[in-house]
Amino acid sequence: MNLYTPRKTVSFWKKPVPFFEAVGLLIILSIILTTVVLIISSRISHIALDVSANISNTKIPPHEKRHRYSPEEKWQFRPRPLSVQKMKTQGCVTDGFLSSYGKKYADDLVELIKRSECYYLHRALETWLVPPDFYFAKEMMQKIDRPNIVYGMFIAEALNEKAKYYNEDEERYFDFRKMCRKGSTGAWGFRTCKPSFEKEEYRSYLRYITRKAMDIGIQSFLFGQIFLQESNGPDSITPEIVKEMRDYAKEKNLQIFIGAQTNNITSENYLKIFDYIEGGVGIDSEGHIEDGPCLSKRGSCWALLWHENFASKANNVFLHLDWSGIKSDDMDIFARMDAETRAKTLENLYKYFTEKNMAFLMPYFAVLDKTNNGCYGPKKSFYSPDMRYSCRDEKAINKILKSKP
Image (cartoon, rainbow, N blue to C red):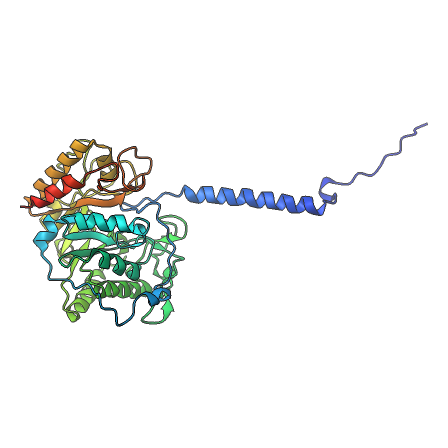
């Protein structure tokens, strides 16, 4: 006789789950998912030639800061006529000095610039993924309060699609998604894109920020990797944009200087649109440069603009130690040199290029790879020559600038 009576078994998926266990499981899964997303996001690399790494891309709309300045404010920077020769011989790279990049180190940066022999502050106002904060920029300019100085602005080829930026003239927020080149979403990381001159919203944004910049006295404007911003069609939009900028400057009786990162473009008609073309020099660990038109260690042609293929067709050539936040760029190579080699490299490059009537801009503030293992400034991901930090190149740079030809 079989005394065993089979019992019905309930499927695992149909078993009741206690409420608190279910909630706990959901919390754990949420934490795991969030962690995975953050890890993936943090590993998205910037692949452009000019990347400003580790910079926050959030932006407080300028109209919310309107209270800082009143129409009756007395202080106003008054730009003077440009000396192109002084820009070439007393120029300094100060990436993001007038932007939020410099907020944490504002006082230190101000004192460094005030001690310097710099006449031209290249890329002082940065726009990489972050729209320009003209209120902060003006605060920094007031702290410097040097009358005979030229400030530069970088018009980046990288936008944050979610940026919040208020157009005070039209009383509306810009829509950065409408500025993006088709198919470029994610180009520089999550929710980023490349802008296109063909997009009317981007043209409106350019018009707004360049005019606001001129209003506070900025005189040099550099378009980042302009071939990424240009029209896809046969006709260039750049001449029209440049003309608008020059027309507004003329209305304000302001002399401006417009440049572009043109890379390997060799059309003389195109290069002559700009007052200058700009790029890196391409150094090795001993500070030497190559003799070809393209940097040999790069797969595609990373143009060496001092080469006659480009320089002979441009109005002016502005050069510097290029940075992209990777260990193989000029700035990271430079930062790994010892102090004596750094000083000799700057002296040699300055002398070599200024004798050719080209500008060589001294490094003051630029991005480094935080794992570079060389000298650095206030943090591992930024270079500064300030004597308080590990590079201590300030005296050597000022000595070179004082010896200007």
